[in-house]
Length: 148
Length: 148
DNA sequence: ATGAAAGTGAAAATCATTATCAATTAGCAG
DNA sequence: CTGCTAATTGATAATGATTTTCACTTTCAT
Image 1: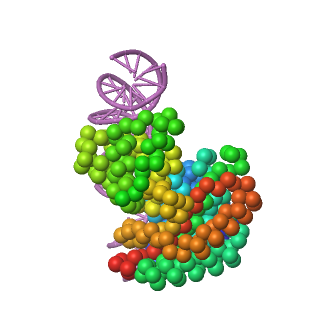
Image 2 (image 1 turned 90 degrees about the vertical axis):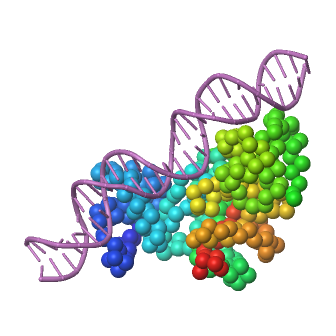
């Protein structure tokens, strides 16, 4: 169970309305950990709040992404996936992706080492390419234990 | 101008036919460096070989990807992009992606440093998660010089 | 050369996502 | 609390990338 209360105020502050659909979708993120697709979120929301349409799910996911409350990913299976940007994982989006079954492992081992590495790299790249870097992703592709 | 001749034999070996469309599409990769979308490849192929259909382009891109001759990427702009897997960049797919204009910079600075880092990480992750890692991607997202 | 299997083009089908639009609602002013 | 107005919504149509279908064509081992 993750904290999502903190972002309720964010809506008010940024001039967005805190509606029932938005609340319900945030609840889904609170109760389900990882990598949900729009369709999956729609189905989960639908259990408690039928009546919320798929279009609204997409609109809300887009809004939450723009607000920085969730992150949007693409693991190459033809649909976008979303993940709550909670404090603990903030900015740390490193995944193992099984190219056979699509399983995704979100690892957070070796964080200090990676943090150091990416921070350094970001500085060097920002300078050389005049890029303002906001985030990064590291994906390892391969076969998971079950699929080898 | 990159070498693609080496893979002609690969077709024979794996039981695929070396057809005119496939040859033409490989030629496009030889003459154009980076990050082409299916549509772009179709248009480029079309200049020399009208008559080759879009479906064939997609089928060929899928085949070449499965054969390991090209890599398929997703930079979040809603279409897949492909890049020749030539020796020099083999396994090194690190990009700067501008989230405003979609520009992609393929950097290959700091390669030794990154190589060392990712190799180590791959070993540790493989072991811990019983993953057989085949490749990886590192993407930095931000604003390019023109878009800041 | 030739036949079977693989490959092809054109068009229809599919799938995720986005736009449209009339109807509803949140949140502020009074 | 009530009424207002812009933001938001649900249903549905539209879009755009990718896949599938199918009758016809080509490759290549024999």
